[in-house]
Length: 505
Image (cartoon, rainbow, N blue to C red; front, side, top):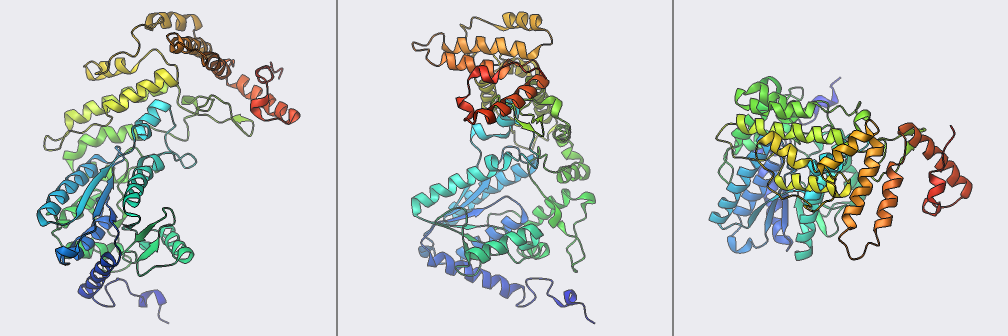
């Protein structure tokens, strides 16, 4: 009996042939572009799928008389600022070549490099606010670094033109989860026409997925059959790029469904702790001695142990509240000591990378001076860590003065006085934090004409720091939860003395 799987088509090009299949997609693109008076937005990551979609659209629109090519086509690439640096440089150079090519050809392609807002950047949240390294139950990075910048841009285009068409390189063959997700959206929201669906997340926009049925090898076949891109790069260089990120550089073009291909290579943030290992960066370093300058990045990333980091994190949440799970405190942000260590090691990595990277690569910053200054602001103003350690760490590691001036030249308590206070408190970290926090609150308000917020700030500081230790905080929270049930009131209605009442157990 013949196996059903063996009789199914192994390529999207089997039915009509390669040329006819591509021409049908090109015709679909032209009709769609001319049918809607809407701007287009193409998501471009520099990888094979988004490259294929962009080239399909570029070539299809190039065959339309220029007088009819009126609607802008925005090519957006979201740089999380912690991308694999080789990939980030590749994308940056590609966008620049696209810009020159579209201008010289008179085509309305407009490349954009999107980045997260300063307050959303990875280092500001990890080292500044102390967010623990991303993990399955606290994946705070994706929305801040990738989704928000893209959605903000898309919203701006929709607001200008009323609607937009978003072209993406999504494929059902990427994973069973992606296939299921695409099929669910198609069933729930329907299709406007072939490859075009309403955007379930952004009103007045449509999602166009012209290669949704392609396999990895279909993508590579298209790219290598059309080796030269419209903006002057070569797709075979992209293939080499994938080979370099594949173990043992094994990257064959599959001729059967059982043959592996380059499609398994994945590029993303070099700091990502959502995977156990960064296999693509490991392979790059292994396959090319000239890329060993990235080794410090890999070592920094591998130093995170998200399963065993409770001792590095405060037993209080970032708001200062103690939250329990099964009568155990849920640990929150990194302690000050750990954040200082993370920053020092990161600057050391930046220094090493700058010294070791090839001269033909452009200069780039692992952490920007604006991020450093925002981290400094958060430590000093939001966390009341008025020792102002950022400039010292910066100068100690990089050997040059921090380019921003001191926050407060007239502060009553300086580093010397705080050192005396720290010596007096000894190992009682919470006591030191409490007194330091009260001093910080007073310094914030001392020159203000109206000091109405001072008492609130002092009370919040006391609420956060009056515990003896984690055990004491846990017992008090248990008491608080019990008291709340007894009083049947909202937490804010309970008096401070109810909250801090000594607990005998």
